[in-house]
Length: 125
Image (tube, rainbow, N blue to C red):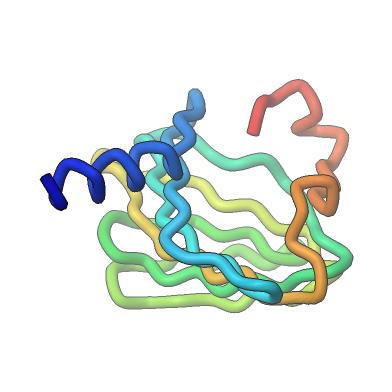
């Protein structure tokens, strides 16, 4: 019975999107930890945040990260830091799902602090 309740709790914390999924692992006043799975060939829209920074750790797959116009390729066990007020985007250029852990940290973590850029405004995040 305990296992079923745990699975149900995890399921209610997962949001499925056209590009993959986001699962909330833990959250507090000034932090949130997500598991992000990005399908091959997909990306998350270019965005920035005024009140939070993010740290991404690649668990499996390959991430193409664009942070303030600088492109970096990250593999398993590699990570990057995304400062506040910095346009950023992540893509999965590989053929297997990209799995990342995202750690958000800041004074405000609400979805209304996601500023999307015009080239991606038609996309659903």
